[in-house]
Image (cartoon, rainbow, N blue to C red; front, side, top):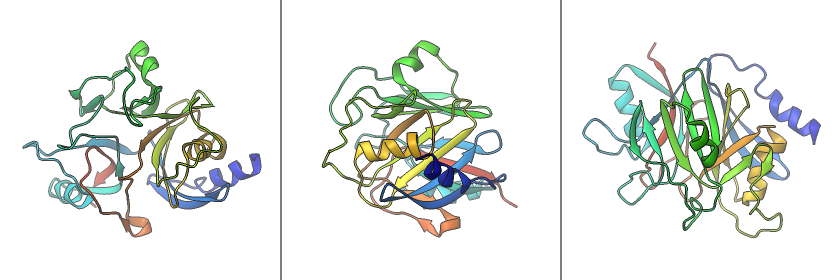
Length: 244
């Protein structure tokens, strides 16, 4: 297991000031991983334009950023949303809160507690379990709540079953303890929650990881020639840079 974790980590050993994406195998499943150095990259959340119209697709957001003189280097769907594409749980974009924290149990994957919050601050990004987030009250520039948590302080979510038969394409995000290393993952074949969580804990050695979604999991990674399309999305997480 240590050798496999080292192999996965070595894929990113030469990461410079750019998002690095690779497809890897872990325990018989394939995943595309995109790693971000939060100390060097511009990581932001986007949901709707200035008129409140949701972006919905990567191409729409890409065009909007291009008009502002920015390039989109990476993007992924970033949390669950209602039919009008409003966020289900806590959502902050560029310091403005759109939705409060939801801490009580509920239906679906979001309500499978513990759930969590992906919080972006200057020079770092962290996945917090929701109760820990409420206790610490970090000042997030951008934040999105989703669920369930995949890994909580190096432990898998207590409800995940090794022999589960529930398999879907899934995507999520994990962060290092110091908040500098952020890894986004999307499965290339249907996986269980248990298998997906083990990727973050055992394959990537990340202490905290959060499930972002399943049915609409999508990735924008131009270096891989990838721009997934499908049903309109709600929140989107992206890395941007000034156009050269």
